[in-house]
Every structure is written in C-alpha cells, then in structure tokens.
Image 1 (cartoon, rainbow, N blue to C red):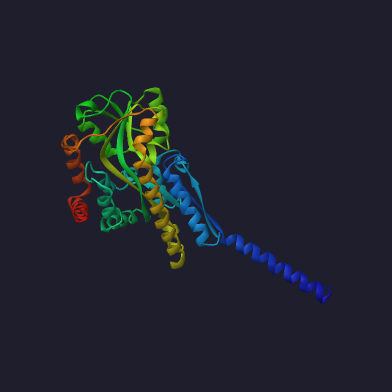
Image 2: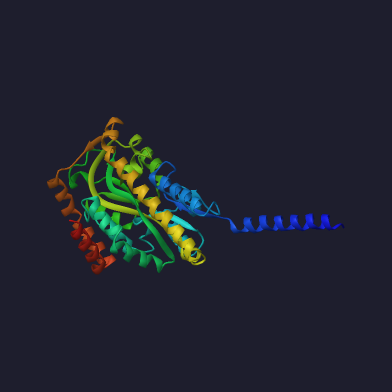
Length: 334
C-alpha cells in the first residue's frame, strides 16, 4: 500500500469512528402524557422537546406519546414507570399521581384556591418544592410545574346550580379524592381513564365529567358530547414534567441545567396558553351550543360547604402540616 493510500484509509477510519461516536452520543428520550395531541399538555411537551433539542444542538431529542400510550392507556401508571426508570419523562397531573403519592392531592382540595395568584404562590413557591421533594423519594425529579387548571363540571342531564343538582348524576372522575367529593355531593362517581371517557359520555355510560376548560374541555371537544357546564372552580389541578431519577443522575450538571431550563420555559408557555384558552373559553362554548351557568359567590359558598367533608378527609390524608404550608402561601398571595 502506498503512503498516500494508507493516509486516505486512516482518514476514512477516523471519520467513520467519529460518525459512530456521534451517533452513540445522540439520544431520544420518551415522554408520555395523559391527554390527546390537541391539548395544551401536548403543546407544552412539544415546546419542551423543541427547547431541549435547541439547547443540546440536536444531540438530545424527545419523542412525545399522548394518551398514556406507553402505559397502555393507564394514566396512573405513568408516574410509577418513571419512578422505576422504565420511562424517561412524564407530563401528568397531581391528581393522577395520588395513588403513588397521596400528598399530591393537596393541590386539588375542594375550594382551596380562588384565583391564579394563589395557585402560583404554591406551584412556583415553597409548597411546590415540598411536593417535589416527596416525589423525589419515589424516583421522580420534578423539572417544572404547569397547569391543567380549575376543574369545571359538565353533564347531559340538567344545569348544575346547587349541590342538589348533583344528586344521582353518574360522574366520571380522575382520581380517588374526587370520588369522595362526588359522594359528598350525592353524585355517583366512576373512576375512569380519560381515553375511555369520551366514548362513555357519548354512549351515556356516565352523565358528566369535570375538567379544566382551556386544557381539556375545549381541545378535547367535550362540548360535542355534553350540554351543560357550570363554572364552579371547585378544584385546581397542576401538571408537571418529571424525569426518572435514574436518567437524571446519568447526566452532568450542565445537561441537568439544560433539562431544567427547557422544562421551566415550556411549562410557563403551557400555563399561559391554558389560561388564555380558559379566558376566552366561556363564550366559545356558548357559541358551540353549551348552556353555561356561572354561579355567584354566594352559590359557590354553598358548594364549598357541601364539599367540606371531603376537604377534611383528604387534608388529614395529605397531612395537616402540608395543608398549613399551602394555606400560608395562599394567605401571603392575598
């Protein structure tokens, strides 16, 4: 072999090795979330994927799987999968994690919040950090908090203007705490995966459901299968981007910072678009044919009183000290 030919062969070998090394360095993370691909959950996850790809020069990408696909449609199972390292990332709501971490129900206690300032004082403040520490004990690192929103009630039977109107309604619910809330109101709760809910509503298996307007009711077109909506703001539900502790620990500080930064920006974007959609949502839903009832402050107080037993039950389960930390943050926001 001539010297020139040897040099060319060596160069080709070096280039081929570089390509192989580069390919090995690139990775695709899998992210699963609860809802469909038209929701603000999806948009927030997509924004995170976009920002992380930019921050890493394309070396780390994220593939987003809606409708809890990677957990066989089981919303509750996703967090557990992340905790044991079977799934890289999850965007899920607090209430969907309560089987694994009962303390997460604190966010959704009935009538805990009255506005977004109070919400932000907890999710973006010390209470959110307290819950993140608890989740870390389950193998999940919270990167940032987003928003599902204030949950409003819809049904196909009658307008809901008082607790009396809830009696006898078959209501789809997302988690254990809401079973107690619906029982307190005299409704018949049925815990059901979101992937099954629209069909159940269409077929009359359940009469109604409760979810946020901007994050779920509008993008999932619930208005096509439900006639009545009441803006009772009875419960709030945050979402979060969580990463497996195993995956997190495999990265250096620089990469961890990129993940955190991308998540914080993505969830701020997701909160903003959810709130914008909620603000304009009432009129949109009326245009789509829904009959919307907006309770007065006095009427909301009656709902709050009716759900107090569920509040007390779950406040005890999540822990009085944790509830007090939330209430203190809320008071400071006022």
